[in-house]
View 1: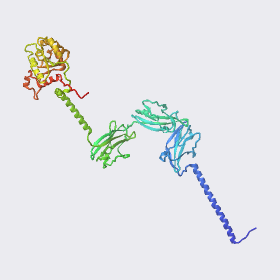
View 2 (view 1 turned 60 degrees about the horizontal axis):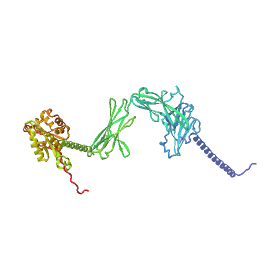
View 3 (view 1 turned 180 degrees about the vertical axis):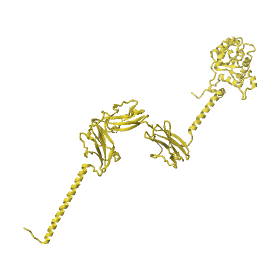
View 4 (view 1 turned 90 degrees about the vertical axis):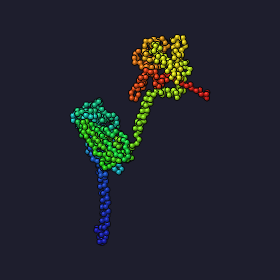
Length: 605
C-alpha cells in the first residue's frame, strides 16, 4: 500500500529526515576527532613520556663509556641538573630510554640496575651496547641527552683494551695521569683503584706516586720511555654486589715542557708614596722549560667584592703596559708593567695583584701602596745609633776618667761606702822603701819621709806608718815590720832604679820578713810607686817583678804628651821627684775608702 499526500507534506517529511541525518553526521565527526586525539596521545606517550615536542634535546654527549664483556660499567646521566634548576627545591623525575627499541629502561630488569640518574650493568654483554637517553622533567620543563655505551671484545691478551683515551705529559718534569674512572668515586661504595702499565701492575716507588684516592698517578722526572698504555681498574660494590670496571690511557710524552710559572716580583712589598705622585711597578714571571710558552701576565685590583683586571688603555690613570717576553738559557721571562700616573688616597692599602695564567697554574704576587709618613725605621735606627754612641762615649769616659769619677763619688757620696772605723786597723798605709847603699836610696827616702806625708797626711788626712819615724827606738826591725803591717790597710812600696835593682835591695827585703811575706804571699793590698823609670825590669826582685806584671805600678816619673810632641822641659824633669797631679789621684784611688757611718734613725722602732 502506498500512502499519498500533498507537496507540502512531502517537503516537510524530507526536511525532518535531512535534519536527523545532519545531527548524526555531527555526532560521528565528534567521535572521530576524539578517537584521533586519543591515538595521537597514545603515540606520543609511547615515544617520549614527556612529549618530544616540548622536551629540549641536547643531542649525544661527546664522552663515550667503554667496557668489555663481563665488566660492570656505570652509565651516568650526562645532564647537569644543577644548571637547569635547584634539585633541592624542585621535584623532578628521571627516565632512561634505550634508543635501539625506543622502550623505557624499567627497574627490576635482571641485566641492568636503574639508580635514578645512572644505569649500572652488573655483567655487561655485547648486546647491551648502544645509546641510552636520559630524560629529566619537572612540572613545567623537560630535558634530554643521549649517552653512548661501547662494548668491545678484547683483541689481544687480557689487559690491552680495544679503546683508550689519550693523555699527553711533558718530559724532564713531574707530570700526572688522571684515571677516567675518577668520576665514579662518589657514585659507588668502597672503590679501590689499581694501575697497570703494559699489562704489568704498577708499584708505588720514587718514580710513580699515587694520591690518597689513587685516581691520580704522579710520574716523577718524566722520560721518553714512560710513554705507553696505562690502565686503571676500579673494584667497587653497589647495592651489595661487587663489580669492577677499567679504562686504558695511551700516554704520549713530548720533549717540549714548561714548568709552573713563578712570580718573582712583586713579592708582597709595601711601597710608601706621596699622594699625587706617580709609580711604575714591574711584574716579573719566570717559566722554566724549552717549549712554546702559553702564559698570560695580567694585573688585577680588588674593588668592593670582586677583582677587576687593570685597563690596558695607556691613557687611563691606572693601566698596564704591553707584556714583554724574552728567552733565557733556562726558559722564558715575562714582564708586564703597572703604571699609576696620579696616586690617590683610594689607591692606598689596596693589594695590586699580578697573576700569571697558564695551564699549569695561576700563581700571583702583590704589592701595597701606603702613604708616606714618618719613617719609624729611620727614627728607630737613629735612636739606637744615639744609644750606641752614648754607650761608647760613656765607656770611653769611664775608662779614661775612671779615677776622677771614683774620687768624685767618694767625695760627694761618702755615705755610699762603709767606714773604716772598727776594722781593727790603725794606719791607712805602710810606707816601705829600700835603704841599703849610701846615696842609692836618697831620693826614695826624701819622697817617703817628706813628700808623701805632706800630700797624703797633710792634704787628704790619711794616716801613714813610716819605719824610722813611727817605730820605737831599740825595737827589732822584723818585729816592728810584722806588727806595723798587721795594723795597716795598704802597703806602699817605693823604689827607684838604683835602690831596688841591686843584690843589697833583695837582701833588705828578705831581712824584713813581714814585708817579704806581704809581697810574696799577697796577703794585703800592695801599691807599687815607681819613682824613676826602670830600663832593666829583669833586675827587679822576682816578687816585685811578678807583682808589677800582674797589677802594674804607679809611675811618678811619667809625663803626659803635649799636642805637638814631647815637652823638653818635662823630659828633663823625668827623673825628678815632683810627680804630676794625675799620679796623686791614682795614689788616692788605691788608698782605702774612708766612708761615712750611717746616721741612726731615732724615729725607727
